Length: 334
Image: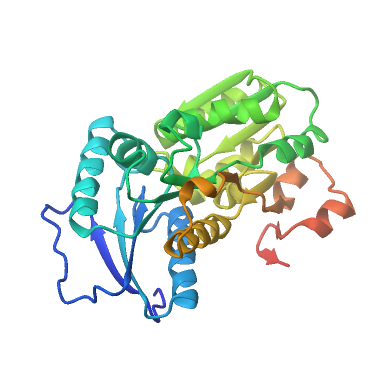
């Protein structure tokens, strides 16, 4: 259960009907912070971001901030129509509640809320977890700043190359809009085109593509497969262990059971950066004077089960640097 000490939090689900009730009894003297989560409660990445934001305000503005948290649910419902409707509902909430600052995690907030309704408005916005190019959404803008999400794919690729037979590069992920964006972003970061790219709609399709790509490339990046429809984590882990033939890697911590090497970014870094920027704005700073930044922190996970399957031995340097080492029976944390 989330620990709430000082900040008053109201959680709003967009799949409920409008109008959204506003509690008139809440103190008008408190600063109002609206947090927009592009996804749904239970999605670890964005949940961790929101938790970091709430904890930050509890610590730095105890009793002086009122927070509303709203979910767009566009990870599970990724149609254009659903996203636009969610954006309309949030616009109505913002117009009604009039927050002092809005913090939004991930791309749906930028695409369906900020870009169509609030560019260069009087309401300050701070984004984080943004996968796409900020320019695509009209950023920077006078009222918008944020932290862009960058997968740590370049150092991951450099590590995977040490164990590969060749340079052919493949990409396997869920058939989601964000992952199509990230495929292009990852190519730019690596400086190399993917030789094969597969977007899987469901678990059976993912398994088929996994087998095919083992013979088509020398290195495989696997991203966001846990949002594949009817994903079975236990079955997937067993399937990978039985069928892996080439070194693979990912940039999300939840992918570590399925890949040889994982270098993942910190969701907490995004939440803390956004909260710090929001606090500066509440204290009088202008969003345009806070430069858009990119995440920097990363953590290394090594999978010794898959290393053994591929007859790979990690160097002592890599083993010492690893935050997590996955063995056949347990996961040992440093």
